Image (cartoon, rainbow, N blue to C red):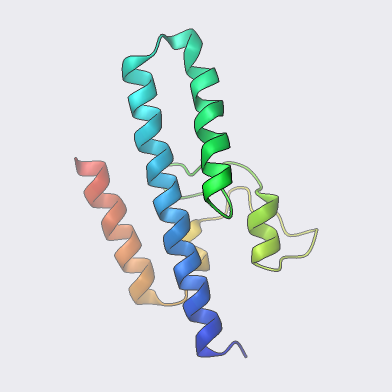
Length: 114
């Protein structure tokens, strides 16, 4: 059984992931609105590199919070074996409690409504 400290660590990690995700989203929107479309890919790469230095793992999520690709760093942090793919899995699955899941989903809904 995982002790309470481990769940707390996992919850903090997920919060950091959510912050990184929304930072990426915000920066993507800024890039799309201010930079020529052909330069957007270069800017996105720069943002991803910056986030990679600041965050333990960087992942792209769709509107349903499903991971767009397997993220090796995240899989390592979650101690998943090599056969455990993260692509298509919801970030919500990795939250420690129903309360945390609900709070994340509510926060995403609020951001989507803005």
